[in-house]
Amino acid sequence: MLYTIAVVMIILWLLGLVTSNTMGGFIHILLIIAIVMVLLRIIG
Image: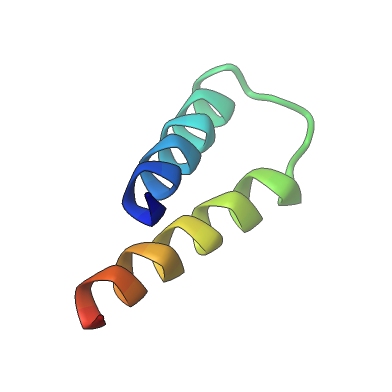
């Protein structure tokens, strides 16, 4: 479940980069959260 959410967040981040969304910092926060979720999944 966490892995799926992390993948969705990474996809949203990539779409934000491609479309040059004006949300700026929020997109990078999504990426950081996604990476943390993946790391927690690997460690756990």
